[in-house]
Image (cartoon, rainbow, N blue to C red; front, top):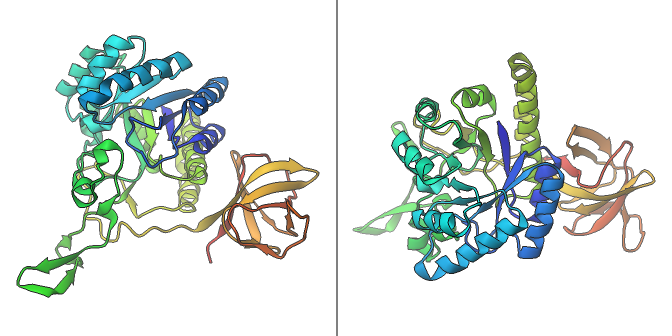
Amino acid sequence: MELLSPAGGPAQLRAALRFGADAVYGGLKQFGLRAAADNFDWEELDEALRLVHASGKRFYLTMNILPYDEEMEALAADAGRARELGVDGAIVSDPGVFSLLRSRVPDLPLHISTQANVMNSAAARLYAGMGAERIVLSRELSLKQIARIRSRLPENVQLEAFVHGAMCMSHSGRCMLSDYLTGRSANRGACTQPCRWEYTILEAKRPDEPMPVLEDERGTYIFSAYDLNMLSYLPEMRDAGIASLKIEGRMKTEYYVAAVTRVYRAALDLLAQSESAYRGALPELQEELLKVGHRESNTGFYFGAPRPASGADKTTWTMTYAGHVLEVRDGRMLAEVKNRFSAGEQLELLTPAGARVFTVESIFREDTGESVPCVTVAGHRVWIPVPFQAEPGDYLRKSVS
């Protein structure tokens, strides 16, 4: 199975490639559903494609906005230019966009976005007949339903499904809540995630008595959904006929992309060796996922409807992102700081091969050469000794006390 990682911008793309993704998905500054992500301008996309293809990987361009008539010509022009640069496919959700790109950029492989809500084999066969090379399935399907769809499709049409990350409380992302409350539409790439806000209820005759939304013995009545975590069920996803495993997270940091991609890369490589090797490593790999910011997680709809999401929006982690390595020279590494750390403190160095613990012996500011007891400001650059091999693109993290 292909491991497909999010590339919200150039930094996330480099992290995904280095930590084991087979492919990445990302967007231009327009026409994707993550307008607040860094995304790529044309120069950055050109450079990204060079990096991707030099690594033998693939880049899928997100063009899954629901556009207006006046935007269609520009969207088609951008798709054509992106294909000339070498994108390996475009992800679209609107049937009009699909039809337009088939005629205007006929050699551009098209993937049907999860926003198209493909829930059954009839819809999947319709898109396959139109020329879709891949269908990103609706998140509301079980593995049993996915296997049935797979059995009724031509072999050359691939199925893609989410394996990890945030889930939307609406039907595969088709939400009007953000637009209604803030004027920023999720279907136009500008979701403000109001499902994650804290709500109270007001009864019309008691306007001065707000009631919090709470859990009781019958269930929970809040909007926010659990995160998805299918690390322990990769063989079941494989057996259902899923060709590509998609990690959600184009709004996430490069550290998140690196850490999660590394875990799933390791799991897939172990599964390729034997299922017993994979099963034996699961406890350690699940612990690694706890080191990055996450909400409470479950298996989504893959084994039936998920349980109510009590407290699902509480984000936790066991380690925090301390910085990343820019340069290594003479037993020292130059790191850009993300969160405070001090001399004498233990850090982990996260590499594609795993994590190694070391104690920070000393810290020197890059700009002045001054020795300092700690660093507190994100963006500062410091030199610190490293007792083993490190490389640019590695990440520093520390335990949360």
